[in-house]
Structure formats: C-alpha cells, structure tokens
Length: 162
Ligand code: FES
Picture 1 (cartoon, rainbow, N blue to C red):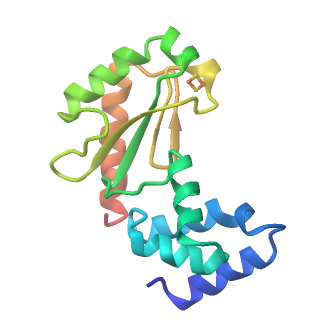
Picture 2 (picture 1 turned 30 degrees about the horizontal axis):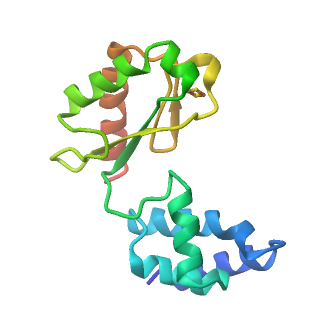
C-alpha cells in the first residue's frame, strides 16, 4: 500500500481532473515510482484511486511504454528506434548497449541496475540517436558517450541510495 499522504495527493489530482482517465498516467507513474514497477496489486490500487476497473487500468498501462508491468532495473534505458534516430545510427547504439550491458532488448543486467528497452520516438528527433535513462534524455549519442552516461547514471543511483 502507498502512504496515506501520497494517496490523498493522488485523490486530489483525480478530483481536479476533467475525467479519471486524464489523471490515470500520472497516478500510474507515481505508484510505479513508489514500487519500482506496476504489479497487479498496484493496478488494483490505481483502479481504486481513479475510479476505473482494474481491467481498464490494465488497458491503459499496456498502452504506455513507460509503464512497466514487470520488474525492471533501477534505471530503464529506452533507446529510440524510430526513423530519424535509425537514419543516424541508433542500431549501433543499441548494439553497443547490448554488448556493454550483456543483455538483450527487454533484459535487465545481472546487478539489477539497467533494463534495456527499444522504443518509439522520444521527441528528440533533431538530435538523434536518442535514449532516455530513467527520466533523463540524452541525444547525439556515440558509443563513447553512452559509456560516460552509464557511469554517470550508476553514480547518481548510488548517491540516491538505490
Ligand atoms: S526518431 Fe528518435 S527521438 Fe524521434
């Protein structure tokens, strides 16, 4: 269960939304932040907060790439594989990440630090190749820059006590 204070905050957000669906993504993200991923129990909690059925929440959850319905690493890496990033070498970036992390797309590193997920456009098309690590967006990637980012994100996670 989430803390009562967070539940009250989310209920207030839902109350100020035009429709419950409008608040659904924010509520799912908050519970995901709290638990690390959106388990079946968390889906039930979201459903209770926004006043939809668990099945309706499930449908919304599977629609959004940034909502995780299975356990993920401390940081999820989303690598854009849409057309603009593909034309400037996202394949090379994805291969580098697979090799560097030792995981296939969808996999999580043995130390539980990173989950690697290819994804659709991240809205940074002019500065590709692009990836997101957690909430941070990174563009103009090269394999060397990817290595620097992985180190930086790992340190940041350690500082945050993750
Ligand atoms: S195509 Fe990669 S960010 Fe848009």
